[in-house]
Length: 244
Image 1 (cartoon, rainbow, N blue to C red):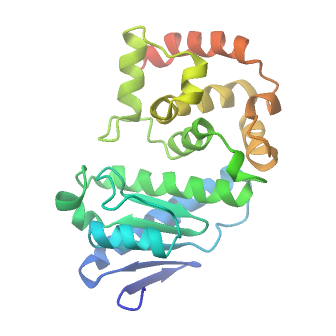
Image 2: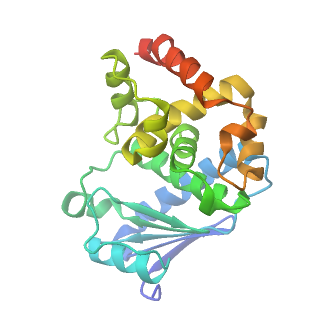
C-alpha cells in the first residue's frame, strides 16, 4: 500500500508521502520529533513507540489508508473535518497540500504542529493505558488538547474559543453533560484535565493514564463528582473566564 510513497526517516520513525508532499513530510517529521521530546518527558517514558505517519494526498486515499492500513471503520467519504487518525503507532494524516480541496481547514503551521502533538498524545496514551477501550472520551480528548497546547491560542479548531464564549455567557455545562456529550467532551475535556492537574499534580495525571483500567479516572484521583463539579465550575469562572 505504501510502495508508491517516498519515506522521510529519522530517530526511529518514518513519514511516508507522495513526491509532491516531501516538504510537508519533513515538516511532519520535525513536529513529531519536537512533540515527542516534550510528551515522553511528561509521561516519564524513555521514547516514543515506533511511529509511522502517512500523508494522504487526497480524501479518497485518506479514507482508504484509515480503513486498510489502520483497520479503523470510517465513513466514506469521511467528514472534511477529519484530517488525522491514529491507531497504535500509526498515524494517517491528510496532507496539508490537500486541505483547500479536501478539508474544512486551511494550513496554518502552528495549528498543524499542535495537531501532530495531539495525535501523539493518543498514541502514547494507547501504549501506556492498561485498557484503552474503557477510557472515557473527555479524558482522551482532554489529555490530547491540553498536552498539545491547542487550548492556549485561538485557532480554526476552536478548542479555546467555545469554552471562553460559554463561560463568559454563563453557559457552563454540567459535569454529566461534559462526560456524556461528545461535542462537550472535545471542547471542555481539556479544562477538566487542566484543573485536575492543578489540583493533583502531573504525577497523578500520569499515574491515572498508566493505571486506570475501568475508565473511572475521578475515583483514581479521589474526586467526588458532586464536589468536583462545584470546584471546576468556580475555577472556570474565576480563571478561564478571565483569560484573554
